[in-house]
Amino acid sequence: LQAGLVGTAALLGACGKKEEAAAPAAAPAASEAAAPAAAPAKVYVVGTDAAYAPFESQNEKGEIVGFDIDVVSAIASKAGVQVKFVNTPWEGIFNAVAQGDRDLLVSAITITDERKQTMDFTAPYFDAVQLIAVKKDSKVAKFSDLKPLKVGVQTGTTGDEVVTKLLGKNSAAIKRFESTPLALKELESGGVDAVVADNGVVIHYVANNAGVGFKTVSDPSFQSEQYGIAVRKGNTAVLDMLNQGLAGIRADGTYDRIYAKYFGSAPGGAAAAA
Ligand code: ARG
Image 1 (cartoon, rainbow, N blue to C red):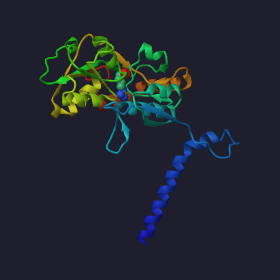
Image 2: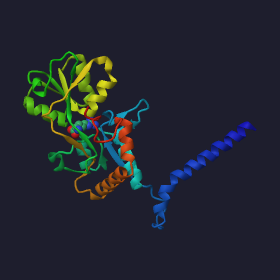
Image 3: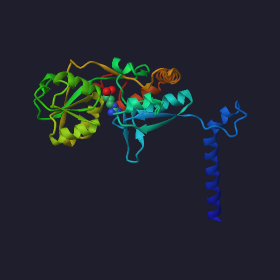
Image 4: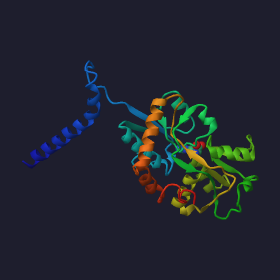
């Protein structure tokens, strides 16, 4: 008898789930009566290089999580659309959106004039600045102190750009890595003397890897950066949806709640730059 009851409960549970899943697809079918079956609702594919905590990373279960993920998920629910996050290597991430393999990118991407030539960006959703990570006993006190040193960066990031400007394009002293955590590992093992990357990521890494003995060095010469969500150039439909959703989650307090969850204080506060 007990097994029977459990069985019924499981069945009911399954039915409830099925109905829920079918609901979004059923709505548009009403206006397309000729369609043989309800077309599945479009799922927007979001590219992200998920090795950039706290903005995007993979948890123990392999799920992609982080500030960017929460922001885009909240925008999507405002807009009433579904999104799916796909881990996408930084190298090639811009190509993936240009070719239509990804509908949008959220990856702590700094809006730059150069990138604006090939992609469209939403309004900025986060402020950032470069930050130097060095070992605790390092004598580095400012950016120009890196001149005679070996510096690790993630290939093609704004960190790469500033270090390239300082040391020269073909400098053998620049070690380029496919991810920022790899560059930081190299700092730990002594293969490089410093890493330059976005402040939020460096601060997060140093705080969560206290045992490795890093410290951070800021420099006033680093220009302020702003992150945007990227779409293929001319994709105004998706861009408008994202901008409206972003304005919506800023207006209703959702953005502030997400910000506080990751950075512990209101946006614009000192926490992100501290
Ligand atoms: N903000 C920097 C840039 O746009 C670094 C972004 C790297 N993002 C990532 N998910 N790896 O160049």
